[in-house]
Length: 551
Image (cartoon, rainbow, N blue to C red; front, side, top):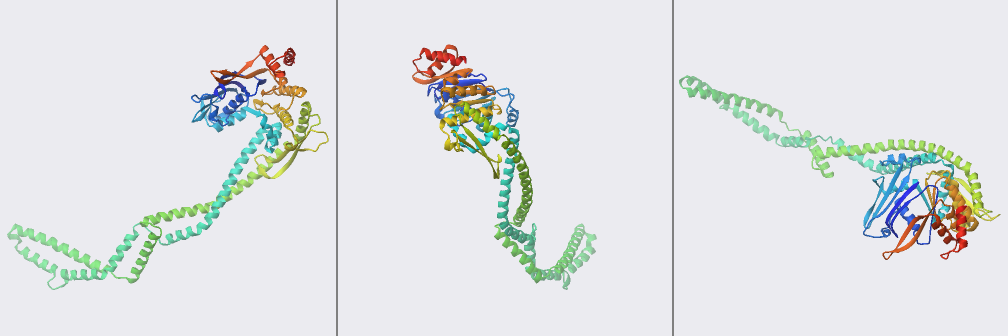
């Protein structure tokens, strides 16, 4: 429940501090005095968008802060999920500045506006007069039935599972669409992969082939020169090796006569051995080098293929082509895995639908069971509110398509006159009848809905006299189950309230300001007497006000 409300620099409110009590509180005052401004500030606190025009003084920030007692309403999970400290007395704060993004806090933890609104929806229901139009909304009408049943846990579980189901369906649709696109691309990718795979590309192979072709292209010249060199070294009559051997013999004969000649012998021997090795290697190499036309054609074809692939894929090296082949392979594997993912999701969504269908059937049974009871109770309350011949029916049907609420659709049918034809609310209900119908519904679900605070903003429009008195009694009964705050222009309702707040407008420093305060005793009697008459309060109005307060 709302314990305290602090407002600074909001519209006509310069500064306000209000303490609220449980039970029934009324707020009264002339039009434009600040009653709706008060509700506007509370709406901003609870997550509504803030217009910078609300700033009383644009050089200062607007502050709206409230303290709520929240223990016993099962909100611990919300605080845990949003990483906010849970406190029995929780503080909500909203700050708005000109040309600066507003800030929201829960227990001094900064939060997004969506989080603030989510908590606000769990703490307060602000119902203004213009919201009676929501009575015509089928979603609201179904919510009335659900609130009366109070199967919020089952409904929450269903909606959570339905959300997962819809998410899975969307993913399945995306995968199928992706598969359809990939199917046309797969053939081309497969062709590219096979082309690269068939090429048998290896790192460094291109350079090896180029070297082999270069060697083969010059094989004849190489062999000719090698054999000619061998001839010079070993085969002609005055060949180099034979000459060196003769030199070795000659030097050996005189080596003992001079030390330097012995060195000549050693060096000549080394040259002799080296030339013999060279001769042997040349002979071996000359034997290995052959001109092979078929091999040359094969190597040239492979080199041409490599160059063609390099140009086709705008690659610089064979290594780039190998990387490209691996990338294409991964894409093909990803496409092949789509079928498996689709099959898994199809199985999961089918199973989820069966489970949701079973749960939706349970929701339907619960709703159908209570609809006659809701109809009778609304009719009973409407009779108390001055529509004695009221008739209400809730038409139920099942939709073939599953939604977040199951298969059920409901339509409220109404007629205020005996024997009249039942029709949808928008076609037969006047503004005053809609207000009374909404009050009936709010009264009906007040004992079952776990919402801590309900604010009724002039929901009593279009009623007066004895009907107003009955409406006041209904509100008083509602306040036994929740904190009820009613903005009203009816003295009968104000007289039933346990706490009375008055809004008035004054001039302060040349500006109009709203003054909102709790009134008691004689001041409250005067306020209700004014509501009964006008500024010229008569003694009879004073007496009537006292009687209203004593009832």
